[in-house]
Image (cartoon, rainbow, N blue to C red; front, side):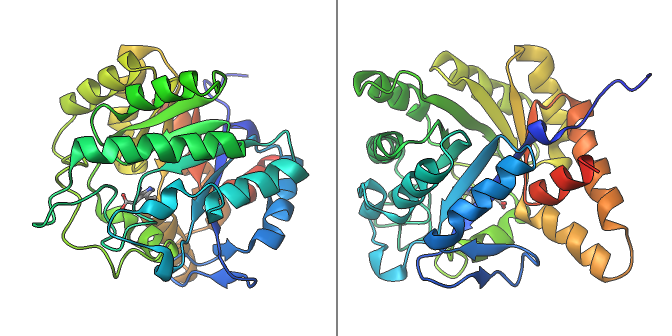
Length: 308
Ligand code: PBG
């Protein structure tokens, strides 16, 4: 009766990795999480829907031979991401799909954008490719475009292109405050970029020292047409979720990222913690901080727990 916040399956977005082959591929640094072949992806969508999860977030593991310096596979309307979108939408039309826009699963150097000869990421040339990537995803049936690349100006460019292409109902959830974080390691295994990444992403992702900068990033993305914004990683940045929510009164999502998931799972395997209690407590913390929803690899488990 006195609870100030509630957590329900409708608060959860479930990130799914897509395998190129025919096998389920477990990811050793993300215990309990696998890459799913296209033939099984619709089953995951059905499970999510049955558990009350409204939306999936998709990440492809592009085969190495399709990765290139310019990440051109991102623009292929038949790439793994687009095939996954169509497969899910054909089977489970009313589950939401949030699709990642960034070049890292497609480049041979593992960066989210195009790089010059010195390895420096080039903002404006990258923006043009991201626009094309967003368009092929929208055409395949994505509901929400989620640019995670942190280039400046890409939200406005994508919004214009979506309007011009007739995709007026496709939303944009901007990864606005995405920090250059040590918590992304297992994700980079999942999309096979850990071994490829040259250098780091500090030239375009945010410094963990900064909070005001997060507010400027959010303000820019909203002005450019973002429908909602994201803070990432999650638990170490709950203060940012709260600041953004208080300042902007828009839906704010948080991403409980791969390293956070791994910390919980390893604590559980070490006998140091109770999984169910930790999952629910951490997810409730996001709600208390002001998040409208959370991307979490524990989404299916949490939704089933919440349903009793
Ligand atoms: C890259 C991207 C990353 C994540 C989502 N999109 C990693 C990175 O920036 O290197 C991380 C998600 C996670 O760790 O769970 N576009």
